[in-house]
Image (tube, rainbow, N blue to C red; front, side, top):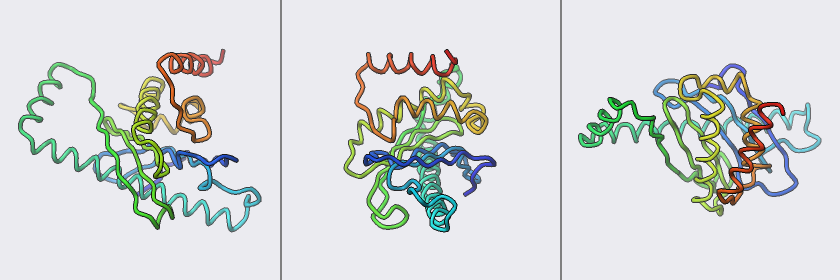
Length: 215
């Protein structure tokens, strides 16, 4: 496991209990797994008064371990899905046909539960989505709505692909972290899962577009 050079690792402390513990963007193809961006909310973030202290250094070390553990699991699950699909002759024929037709890359999705204890201390689950060599995952409190978490994940991933060249150049995340931060601010404020209807989504997308265009 490696954290990409200049990987964006941020911690956000909120007075409210965060529903999402971490957001992680990473590479997923076989080989070294690189974390390109990670943001942590709530109790996993740095606590006030820890700045520059040994406690802060230890806390950040533990958080890196948590992020790395999730990223490795996402890469493993993605690889397993690829292996299963390759062993399915019907699925392989369908993928070959889609490739010949120039169809868009179909993302892989999944969810898994981390056991209670290390690295998070409490039981959490992760929803993830990948396309090409880029993966996005949300680590959520165990009591949260998995369907809603998956919907928010898909919305964020769609916007990341729209505003960043994730499929061809996932490292662009390192160059434009402000775009990632803006997307998370609009659709995952302070780590809160939002229930949005289609009208609210369009309104937020329009606000985001204005923010990113500097208007």
